[in-house]
Length: 66
Image 1 (cartoon, rainbow, N blue to C red):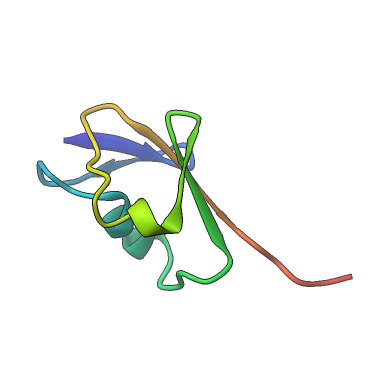
Image 2: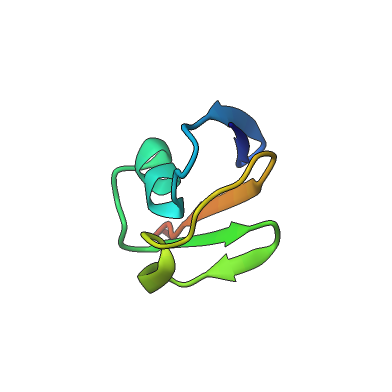
């Protein structure tokens, strides 16, 4: 199935989860926020939240600096 992550198309097998999308984009879990179709997904729900065809996923990471 095709899923858009941060504006870029990605192919995933059926049943893929938010956790798999985060893993593909970044290896870190700390300091990361995720929204699927403009709805925030809590970190505790990443493993159980399945993605569907044409979902839009935004993965945001915190950046330190000044």
